[in-house]
Image (cartoon, rainbow, N blue to C red):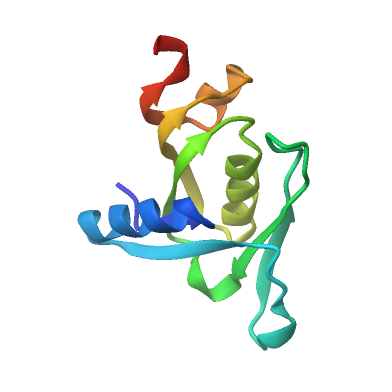
Length: 129
């Protein structure tokens, strides 16, 4: 059971917040290209590998939002390359918290090994549609 749900901007913020509310745990928005220059708090940041558009995106959040004892579940609408989930896992581990996996609406992973490595759970799998 997670203690925190991590939701990447933009659709992950919506389904992640709804999931956190339903489960009764905290929610952290994983912001895209947000720079801590306007915030005096310490941030953790990570650049993704290539996404489905071959972009490298910088994700981050305030460091104090996830604590060492937290168990974190990433929730998003779709997973394709796994780049966002891998960045999320790196951010969670940088905070000293425990990554428990990724949950999404649609699993469109192009790299099957990530399904087990992350691990990923989904409502729909494009391989079975």
